[in-house]
Length: 187
Image (cartoon, rainbow, N blue to C red; front, side, top):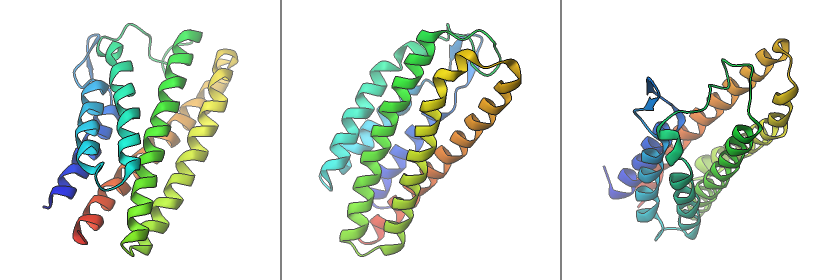
């Protein structure tokens, strides 16, 4: 495996760690902060390839700091409670927005590198995946404030939307992994 592929793999594992929360009691045994630190390490090494990776690193650093409180879970799970705090919604919306900036810069870097290296298929896939991600995350952010007024009947809709977001996030991670392999092969 080339060095570039290793750096992309760190980004992939960091995003996987940040995507899934595993708690024992109220302690998050896989804190998002650890995931974002891995992303930062991977992006640091890729910054020489494209300035967008450096910009993404800044967003990852902000996320690493902002997710420190998630290490201990004081807030109720949004999917299993009917009481939703407006502050928790604002906090999660801000984190989602910063993560969208992170993904934007990673994808912009991948798109530019794929174009420069003549990887048309990767270029098209990354562009399409970014557009899908932006639409789904945008819709998610727009609908989040309405959670405060959702009747219990509508919460199922929000759970479905959350599952769609999860699926799209996984496809984003898969594409980043593929980009690492393809971009490394033409190093």
